[in-house]
Each structure stands twice: as structure tokens, then as C-alpha cells.
Image (cartoon, rainbow, N blue to C red; front, side, top):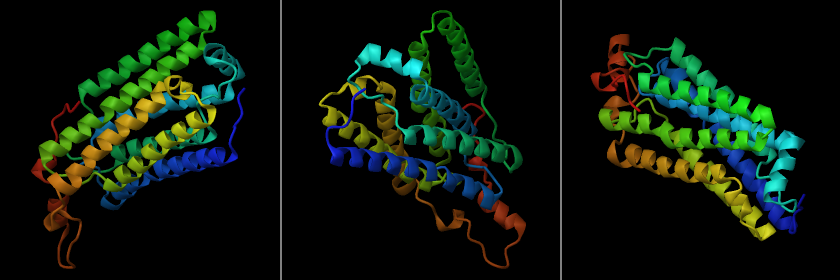
Length: 278
């Protein structure tokens, strides 16, 4: 197994990794807090949350298996060379565990808070069902010949595909509503910072090892960063340029306003989304 050639690059790698972990981990909280304060999930697309849970669950399986399993690591080294480093760090595993937990909490909020006419689309339910059915079939195929690295590549592909499509329902919903009310921009800004740091972490490792195997040996992580940053930029444009928040739509009320007036600010006809958004 390869070791670091430069202490300074190793330290930089760890700093960038944990910065990405902190930024990405904190990014889940603005939406959870916003939902809690409003006691409503109107404006948050449910398809996005369900696809996000599928994505992070797949990413957790990939990270934890490659980081902890010596058998899978051996298969990785046999394929890419014993002088390489595994492309998963401790912060990747920690982030995945935290992400699954916080996304599950958000899903629970959807179940208990006001959601208007919003619901999961049949398209989303179909996609999630097909994904996990495919994963189950691949598991039994891998079980017969112990091709665990191949199985991990399947989960890696799943999390990349989910990352690519999970943002589309929320982007579409914001476009149809001409508003980002109910969707936390804090989540996006932190996610953007984490994506840049994550990409930088991989560059630092490649420079130290004088090898770019770190990129094509973990193409999922590369695409994850690029796709996330791309959609984060779209959300930033929507929030600050296309649909800037108006004073009348902010959750600011005077002492004399009653619950009906507050509800009018939170739940408007434009908040209703079509049943299928993917």
C-alpha cells in the first residue's frame, strides 16, 4: 500500500477532507431547521429527499465496504496496483453515515409536518424500486464468485446516477413556482463549498502520488463533485437572480397577524407541485 511522499500535502489532504465533511454535514441542518420552524415542508420537493436517501445509502455502502473490508481492498489493489492508495478516507465514511441519518430525519419531517398537496411521484417510486431491485440481483451475482469490487462499482454507479437526477425535481419545482420559498439556500452554499473541497482533496492526493489513478479509480467521487457543483450553481442563480425572495413571502409577521395570514404567506397556490416532478 502506498504512503504519502509529502507531509505538507498529506496535511492539506486531511484538512480539505474534513472541511468537506463539516461543510456537507452542516448543509443538512438548514433545511431541517427551516422545516421545524415552519412546521411545514411546503416548497421542499419530496422526490428530491427520497432520491437523496437512495443516493447516500448507496454511497455509504460503497465507502464503508471499501474502507473497512480487507478483502475488497485486496481486489482494488490487484486491479489498480499495490502502490496505490484506496480512494476512500475516514471522513468519507463519517459523512455517509451522517448523511443517511439526517436525510431520514428530513423524510420523517415530511411525514409529520404540513405538506399541502405535495406527495411522492409515481416516477420517483418506480426509480427507487428499480434501483434497489437491481442492487439485490447484483448482490446475489457477486455472491457466487466473490466479485465484491464489481458489486461496489454498481453501488458507486447508483450514487452517481442518483446525484445526477435527484436535483432535477427541486430545480423544476422552483421553476414552476417561480420561487425558492421553503428550500434552504444555506444547504446549497455549504454543499457547494464541500464539493469544491472534495475535488481539491483528490487533486492533492494525485499530485503527491504523481498518478491520476485516484480519479479514474474512483470516477464516482469525481462525478459526484462536478454534478453537485453544477446544480448548486443553478440553485444559487434561481435564489439570488431569477426568483429573489420578496418581503411579502418571507416568514415575517407583525404582532397583530393571525394564523390565517401566516398560512397565506407559507402556503400559496403556486406552492402546489404536480404529482410527478422527475
